[in-house]
Length: 512
Ligand SMILES: [Mn+2]
Image 1 (tube, helix red, strand yellow):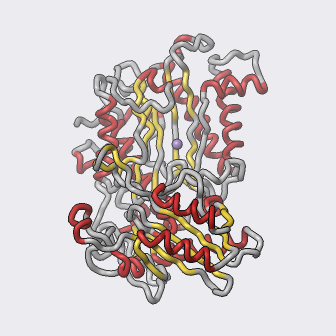
Image 2 (cartoon, protein in one colour):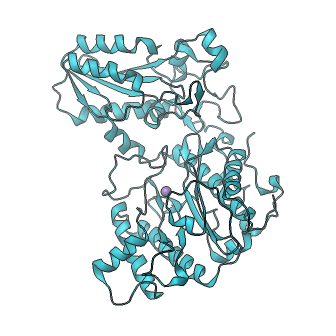
Image 3 (spheres, helix red, strand yellow):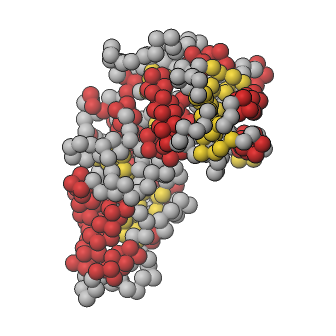
């Protein structure tokens, strides 16, 4: 069975810092190792088909997916319940003057670097959340007519095709997809336009729920626009309701988030352990990617920031092509994607393995603020925008105490000066997307089941003459992923080293 590999598999010297938490503890077990409990709800008429299909299944990839699950950790029933919930939420949103509700959620289409050279495929998160289907250009349609008690789910997929499969690999096809994704019908993608036109013309007035901006699949966007133009159909956006569902994680999703966060944490620990003066930022980037993948992640969650010295003052520095200087700190912002769920972690450490006096002052300042903000999330459960205000206030006060900002400023002026030194937000939601559920505003209080980042930073340009010289040219960010619960907040990235003593004990301790 699949197991997380630990540092010993790479020959790393195991220090107490790299063993936290114990990898053998059950709480960190991979979901795929946990047998489905007997009370897991399944849908009677639907079982996972055997044979080689268009995506991994519990039969072909038992090291990745447990028996009875559709994707790692998630059952067909959970996907179906999400569809049920979305349909009820949308119908409840509008007056009941429409005879028919048609909800269209497209999957992503393949993207190409050039000619026939594809990028790694990444499914649209909204579509994946409702189906578990990883096929490019598939489309979910849900139709609720006035006459019917329940809605009908139709999944449009690519039909089996020997020639296409010779090049691209196996497809599930229509008949298998009905079983696999537990939908009422599966039809060929080519029939989508005809089907949509027919449905809309048969049942007026109809309302079409479709996210009309930044379309996930531009290939069907024109079909939908022409139906809207000629079909006397009202348009509404399903994404707001969908993101309100996605932002609160189910117990199974929480387990997946724990794993993505744990793997991400250990990859940053490994990058720290391998850091040596003179090393290229690119090598650190490669260590992050390698460590994530060998532990079970698909790939990085985003192009990581690996920034030595003053390059860390550029918040989204991703060139990662300079050499690390002995006297610099290095800022890393990275994360991994595992079964579509993401972690997002930032750490900053001294290249030499020992903090200089001034680096240590700044690092401890940011760390103090970061820990306080995590406490505040638990104590006050504030909206994330309010947490941002708290960050500016805390940073300002601490910078003043250290003599980095002048003592004679206060109130808004102090907050503005702190904001100039940390011009990014302190938090975002995290999940299937790194900036998850973007339609959920950061003005709403955080709730149980949300996962949010807490990531204060400090970026002092080498040219900032308003700050004492010894503190200039430094960028620091400390970012953890935090699960909101009815008890204390749970730091999902707790395994990632961040105390000064622990960092100094780990940096440079592993030879590649
Ligand atoms: Mn982040």
